[in-house]
Length: 139
Image 1 (cartoon, rainbow, N blue to C red):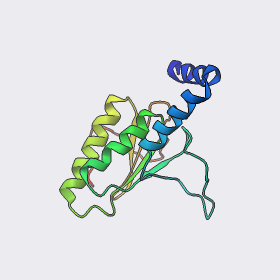
Image 2: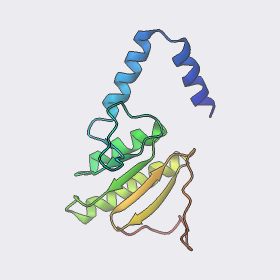
Image 3: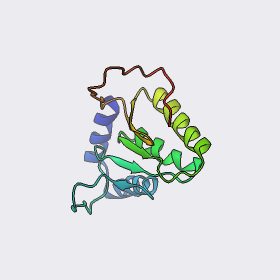
Image 4: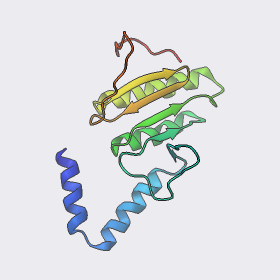
């Protein structure tokens, strides 16, 4: 919360060059990511902190993009449907779960191969009976 207030104050008082550098850094970290789409409408503006990022990793290194978004306060949906090797998929989820634990965020398995990760500020409300996050999440 305190960090977000500082960022808003910084944006308010910053010169145009500083904001351009910040936006360029954010855009670079979002390369290869797509905002959540609703119907046929897709926003042409840059991702905002509350946009949902859909990540379809093809290799283990792609998981870092998801963690970078979580660090910026954006929820991430990881879709493992295109991961051919099950071992790589498990490593990606293990990496994301470790990162979300460190960031004090939340995670939820939506269905086989689809996972939701949210930063600390965004809670996941589920109607499932068993929401024990300490058990291993099978892919």
